[in-house]
Amino acid sequence: MSLKNVFFRFSVAKKKKKAVKKKKKVFQLAWVYEDLEAEPSFFTKRMFGGLAVYCHGKMVMLLAESPGDREYRGQTFDFDIWNGILLPTEYAHHDRLKKKWAILKQHPVLKKWLYLPQDTDAFDSAIDDIVTAIHRDDPLLGIFPKST
Image (cartoon, rainbow, N blue to C red):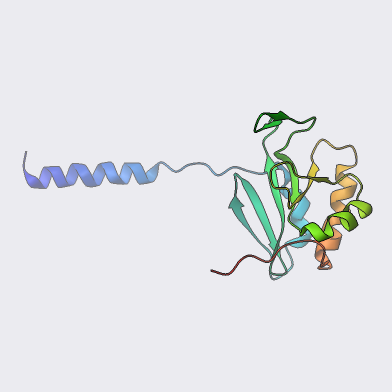
């Protein structure tokens, strides 16, 4: 086999490998941030197997869709720990935010963040209120990304 044939086969194989693209996950919870999309600073970024939402220069939520996952480090929870909306915030804001929205929980893995499980009865109304607060740039919601 000539060097030309080897190179040709290698380049064809490489092209085929590039052509096989992994399908990006479509998030069913994407509707929650539709009202934020008009904000000039809005963008999303895939993170931790979920979709991080940024607005006003802060990460304001993380959409997580992995139903059935209720265990972490040998502890079992009575709710899916990766199926809902995580709200990045500072510990100092937890109590005030939980008073405002009593259905929020401290996330069992990312304890600095609050969590709204998708299967919560008042999920829709709570997330609507939270998105309104994010749109107003509520200082209690969101964290600024670390500079590198």
